[in-house]
Image (cartoon, rainbow, N blue to C red):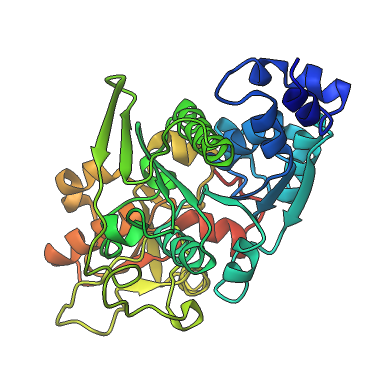
Length: 393
């Protein structure tokens, strides 16, 4: 062993040298790279589908300080893909569950928790405390917030996203050497046009692929091993087992990193953090019946027997939970069963979180059902605000 290698080894205990030996054997990492990992700080935003595998592999890799930012609690439907958590963690904070699991994986890693999550008020200061930020969030608003904060903090951001069987991974270096997230997606999609995973579904193993690639890119950034995905986007299609690597260019007109930026203070920006769909209502001549109501108003109407509930979820979803007395017709059967629905009484259209029911409400109003009303937030909001005994999914 050379003197240089001896000097590097002094930063790692004999137990750590044994633990990380398979890394150290890699010429691209070696002792120096492993020591860089030990002295690094990585923030993982979201302890869910992507944050779980990303944080597990970052902890196992020996990142010195690992931050976990998430304000949610563990729920049963998380366990299909969020492998940080188990049955015993239900109804506990994801950050607490994450710390328990990650500390068991590697006690040499300092786990730093941020149970309040990320906000415009704290994001730039928080990101500035880390060497790399891994974005494991699941909604557009938070991705734009993370992108903007990382840009102002000059902290590399490892981006990942999933939808059904497809995933994406990229790196936004935030050093003027490549594009940012806004260069790739200048504007969020119109409300209601992209269903979230609770409406569209997601393959659990896909989260493992994308989250692992995010951890890999973070490790490459920290150790300077290989070429990171700065200026490139990897697109994964698990149904065809296909991987594509696309080149990205910095947009000169980008409002954040372009030549004439208009975003200069994220606390003044408006970010929609909700992963719920927020569809635009259809105008009708009959304005007496609202196009959409919240679950509190829906319950008032049901209790007063002033409205019927049309549940347009799939049969397996209804088997999980339902509102007693509801009319149950899966979304794709509604067009063929219009004759069985009444136009005289208000019809509260319900799905899981409001996306499918919004489409059905629009369709029904176009067919002359002027008293069709979408229930915002769906049965998930009903379980949160009206009947907590219902099983959420």
